[in-house]
Image 1 (cartoon, rainbow, N blue to C red):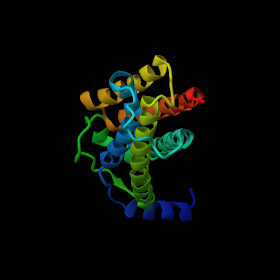
Image 2 (cartoon, rainbow, N blue to C red):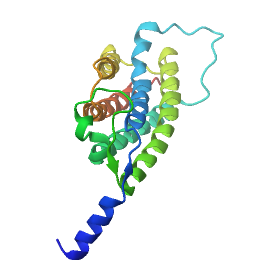
Image 3 (tube, one colour):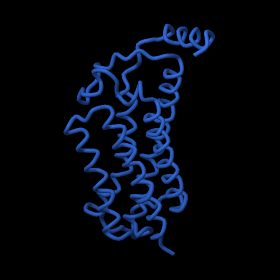
Image 4 (cartoon, helix red, strand yellow):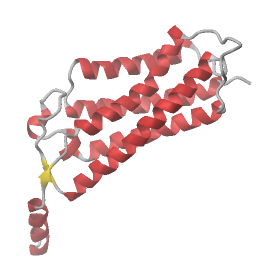
Length: 200
């Protein structure tokens, strides 16, 4: 390492702050996945459409397309978590600490803080869009505009169960990020399959 590189590294090490609690970003991202996985419930609680039930003004193809975009967006967010290991993959006590707020005292530099704030902005958007589009897709399924086989519902149900296990077992930060990415990939595939079962 050259003298200039060493000096730059030293300056970066000294320019650190206490990091925001990473679970305040990871948990809303998991909640967005949960909103999409809730499509599973339509298989058990859907009711036949009645004449007085209002029909969605959005086209099914648009809702499915936008929901798939949300899934891809959440994949990118969890990949970003995975890359920012010092903040989101757990270092020190955070490696073995169970899911809870207030135990992650990692000090991070300006780049990690920028990633954190960018992630919070993106997650906020994804949470709103995921819940809205998942609702539209659930309504379309209930109205018969999308008619997927039971296997797809089971896939969404499995994603729900994996999310539930993270909460029930109070998973570590690292595990929450790793499993969250796996679920995001799974949900992307399931939403893509839903497009194959649109009505004529």
